[in-house]
Image 1 (cartoon, rainbow, N blue to C red):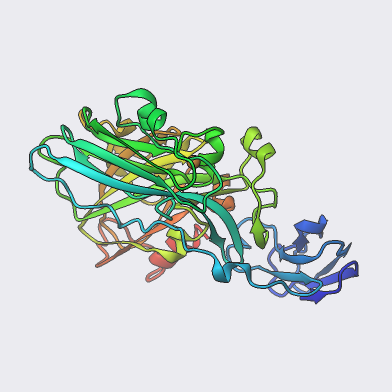
Image 2 (cartoon, rainbow, N blue to C red):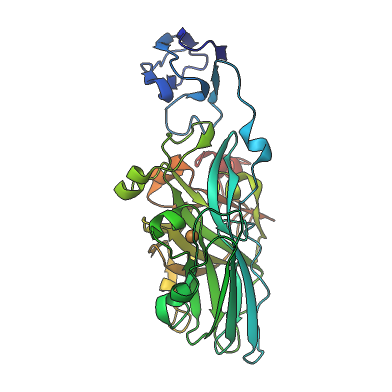
Length: 400
Ligand SMILES: [Cu+2]
């Protein structure tokens, strides 16, 4: 829909399916009553007093996700901002090479800090700050006893100082004290990985919360002596928050809001950097009978995650990512603090879509979900529907 700027706009909606619906254009504060009966109608009227591309949608839970939204263009349509935007979403299968049984070595890690316009969702962009142009940054994989040299270069076209604090480091600031790099500068240091575990790293330049929310976080796995047990699939997933001036779902370029950051009131929550990273762009896939390991961390910077996979039970949870304590067994949901992590393992027994969430489920409506797709034969003893053939469809539908 396209209308002239400052026009008084009326949108009429007729209910075609008899379910409850409404229509809203949040940008202009316009929202209709609910309509319930088939053939029932409603309307909204508002003045389109801002130029740009905005969203209209049905506000009932799940209806936008089912496709009930569209674009309202006020004035002349803008250039599609996202065409030049970078794809910053992290591929969850980029987990590095398992360390195995090798002895301690010297490992060199090269990181570049960047400030880039990235694609946030279909039709929207955000100025991300990153390690190596992805959010989260690269998954670093070493073993206990390794000496690790971190080379941190700040891109010459950056506008801010950046640094790195790795929670695996024993030393001042986790490395941040000696890596504050101005644009075009490089800094480095070497540490010994004294503790096994899965650790968050992040930029630690003031205002630290701003650097983290913008995308400057990742994880380093320090494997214990002898390595981790073998599994069939490993995935790297991190939860983050974005604080934008514009409401969730707005189109165009989204700007950072300091006020919302300080209020800890994010507009967007996401796995692996963008709204669609793990729901559309990348697939987490496994076959019936395989074992799955998820390296899960919270970049945050602020919200604790209640990590859960809908339709699965974690066989093992290495709580707080301690790899030297015995794992918890048979766990539904595990709490992961900002700047913290967990390692979970489970065998997948039955085909279908298993949705990764933070069980604080309002956050799904702000973008936080990922899909693990399991393929293979259905074992009727594990699960069967009383509507033959409907099991997979029902699993999927219940979460969209
Ligand atoms: Cu930074």
